[in-house]
Length: 322
Image 1 (cartoon, rainbow, N blue to C red):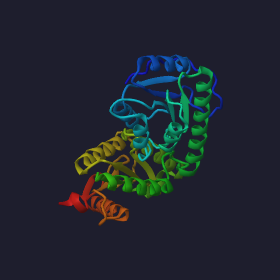
Image 2: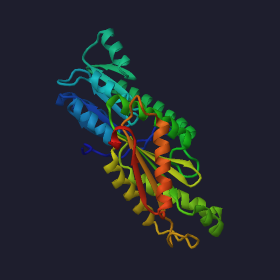
Image 3: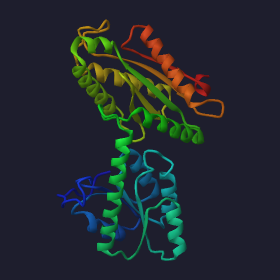
Image 4: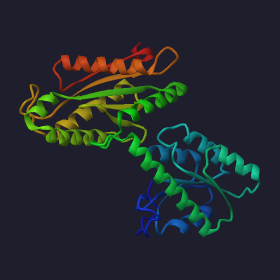
């Protein structure tokens, strides 16, 4: 979906705001879309969805900073769209402002209970809607900043172990409800201790940053997560991804690290930095636990190391192993 326009931004209310906040307008009426578009096109990147299904697809692919959502739409109304966004970790934190012709307090209550952060009635007042959007963008930016301080690895910039542990439990519950596959990839930099001993810890830190960036670049979906698990180990959590897709993704990750061509004269595997990857997949159910997925991925990683490193090894537990 193409932005309707991208224009130079005016100074943001706070430095932590995006320079061009990305807004998604969801409405099935062209006149309503045009009114909101004209209110924001000068200093925001504006996208449009004309149905609930289109809005969900857009948000899961490349989440906006805020959604202006009409309540009354055919097939799937705005309340249902919001309810579907909130359980998904990749879209749960997007502020949703409902825009509606309904003015009954009961309608506003239902919208807020569905997960909306605000409720604006039509016809809209341009100054009011802009002020409310700015307020909620600022609140989201502040929350994102605090979250990053708590959940981001200070060296590499990817998620830390704490964030991974929480995200694993969230995705486990989500995939269990939907009977969807969940995949975990454990990644270990080959002979990293030797690299540190040979090149020094500063070079080792630079290597970790480069490898983390290469891994993160390969994960295109908003709900995929890469985290530093500890030392030279990273993990990738891929919801709604089965064994076949996971093997392809892991091989892409492995090749991306090889393509960095970071010299490693002390390696017993190759002349450059390489990684070994262990994959485990399952469909979470009452008979399995997240710890089993971790243990299976760790076992697959060990098997890949034993087989010679710089390779991918995969396994499956529960239903996927049949």
